[in-house]
Length: 219
Image (cartoon, rainbow, N blue to C red; front, side):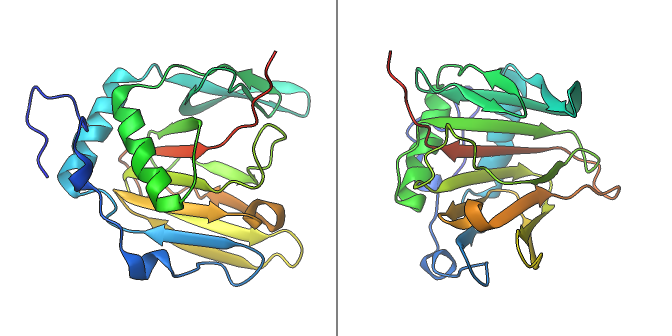
């Protein structure tokens, strides 16, 4: 579906998403978890327009991590969006959520449909090129609902995504293509780490939107 110039991307554009039932039933992990990959979840033209929209409308910030007691600023840029009280702390840095945009809410609805779950937050990552990546980690912070899946949408450059089992170190990889979606179901985070591998052969950007469910602590 074409998003006409002058129109806000994704407002009432639900038909540009497509769920492939065959792909949705293929588990990409050999054991101890469930990961489902959906290529062409969003069509090519809409993916490009939405990526352009995000690049120029989201208030991107350099990510900061605490490693071995030192604060490290990454080249990769991030944004944290969510419902009120969806604060998120990882690598020793606390993040307060920005308000949902109408476009992100449309994406969230479709990702909830794909994952058969409800989400209240989204972590956006902007990778300038293949030299930006994400090291081995699990999305198992205490604020996250461990019984909820995590669903992500990839836009832009195709990148290699890897899984490594925490006990036997067995690995599994797949390519995250433009407009593709990935859903990680419990207990994947308990048994597996994952990483976005760096490469010197990719010179174009990528944006990833990862939808999550946070535990809310009311005052």
